[in-house]
Image (cartoon, rainbow, N blue to C red):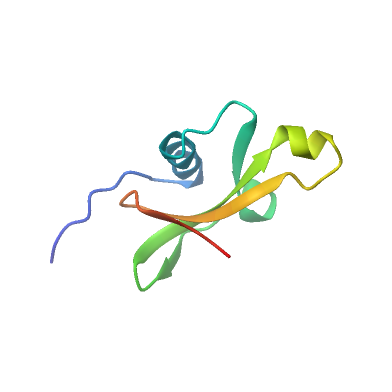
Length: 82
C-alpha cells in the first residue's frame, strides 16, 4: 500500500495550508465548519477537513463573509465545494 505524504494534520494546519496555496491576503481568514470545529471526514479521494474562508471586510459590512468552502485533503489536494 502506498503511503500518502501528509501536508495537513488538523483543521488549523489545513486552513493555513489552503490560505497559502490560494495566496489569500490578511483580510481572509479560514475556519473549520460549525464554529471552527471540524472533524476529519473521508470520501473516495481520502481523508479531509472542510474549511470555510471568510472575508473580514464582507463580514464587517453585514454579510456572512463566506467566500468559499473547501475540502482540504491530508495530502495537500483541495477542492472548492458547491
